[in-house]
Length: 317
Image (cartoon, rainbow, N blue to C red; front, side):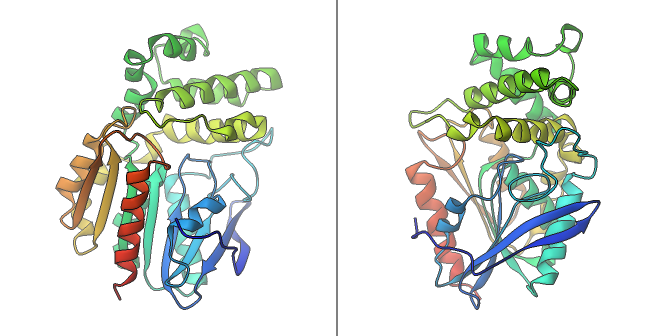
């Protein structure tokens, strides 16, 4: 990856509804514009994301999505209201920022939930997108949410049973993310903390399907755990406010936009057929299925493919 760099500009964008969204720009002020779309939802735009881009060629914009990272209000605050945090609100935030920065088109880099959000943004605003690079591809469909919160119990049965039993007995056969969301907003801090820990324990489990898996130290922070768990359950419980399978159905809107989809063969909780179906429906996408790698960043071959795609697209006008 490229050397560490610092932003040359940053700010807080007032997007309404009481939200202020943190943004930063790094790299070459005259370079090719690119937007990094983080996952989670709720992970935040960490500094390591800057290192995928050649700083001499790219003008890289990073955003902490609503209620996470340096954006305010923080989803970890006791009485936070998440009702104005949906896929459509985030898409609107990106557009507002693009216009404020005077950018015509930008490349999108996204991973996991960031892939869902990137595809939704590109299908709504294809005129604003030059290229797309996505890895650990998701669509956040109801079927996918059901898979990761229930069917993955067939891979990790003991761990899943603990996860299921973390909610009230009457909620165990229903929408598990929404059941957890209610606990995560309980008036009792002890209930909130236990639900956050139980949820994040499952997050650490269902991605543990490949040889290079390592624990994520971010989950050691109780504030991060609560912020992250609240946002993930909020989005998953509503299937990201997207019609079922709409991102695949409307992939034709991406015609003319070059794309690279990168997905680990051992990403079991986000199965490879998600990326495969999107590549079949998107006329200008190329798909790379990476053997022996799983979900998220860090795999050597996945990183090589991301860098190669970004370096190649840096040469396109």
